[in-house]
Image (cartoon, rainbow, N blue to C red; front, side, top):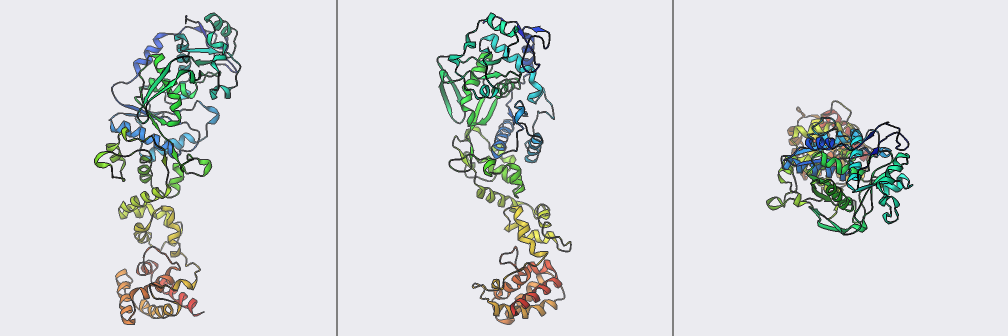
Length: 519
């Protein structure tokens, strides 16, 4: 294709010859300077979210895998914000991205907030350069100006019959005349009409497609903004990205990406396409169906390290001597992560499995750390400052699966719930209302007379009373616990609960239990 003198404009609604009032030919120095900025010699990965909503589990997995690839190789991890789809932007979504990455410990080496050698790192701030690269492709004959009347949605959909497109074969003179006339246009990729395109993916291997099945996708829209696919290719190259991690839904676009790389004469990165995270065998996870985002999971009482550990295993498995290991710290994941372990099979998100992981992480905390973590949840129910939250947390740690389970488990410490006397009947403990009444009548004066209100003192007194009454320990302990807590299932037994409640409140509740049994 011969050289075209290109008229550039960004004035709405369409480009025209008078908007910037200057003409330019493509300046090779610009492209040379951009090439000179690209870092070489290290693994470079990027997480490039669009700020269009919440951080769903699939987004988090992509961020995690991308970060792990870079850290495992001692490379560079980049955060890039892709905001070219202005109509879908959600206020505050960028803050969610930053907050999530920070909470998860997925620190970036380059990005909008920390800078770097190949910025800007927000696509809307890179707007001017996309047009230059689109026009360069047209100069190379790998793209063309399309003046056909199409709506923006039709353009974005890629539903386009290139065989019927008269613009594909316009002469340079015809193109220039239309540009001079100020006709609106897009720039489309010129896909070869014959032959095949082959690309390699780490998970899916070699994939070959017939070029005739590919559409001449839009690269540059009428408003001068790039399409998602084009901006990705340009940015990934100019930022020196060596490994591209994305969802398998982009497999169909990979041949067009490769043709762009080849047209520019650029090195093609390593592709890692990840199969989707599914809510079941047939449906992808979706907020619309009530599936949780990362922030939802944290709000539901899951720990960030547990979420990261579980998400890492949604589509990846360690190899060799680590193949049976399930629990990984973030540092251990860095050491173990190998892209060869990424599966092409969809992964099903199992909330019960995540809950299992979370319980393991809660129990692995030091008692001090668990107490600090649990206290806000304890205080949601236990408002009485005289009640020792640390003592309650000691009962919870071995019995807690989610932090949000805590308020309901411990609400009886603040206020005795209304309960049915049927709870005093327990076959295993050999209790019924009559037996329970007798046990409480015996226990009240013993507890009232205790000189010290410690767990050891309460334990010894009640065990001694059971011996005296010639009953099993549980026969005494069951009604004491029921009267003290008003619940069938409690964290901790009768001794621990009584100690935390204090002497006066314990005795008061046992007497209330007696009154219920006598009525």
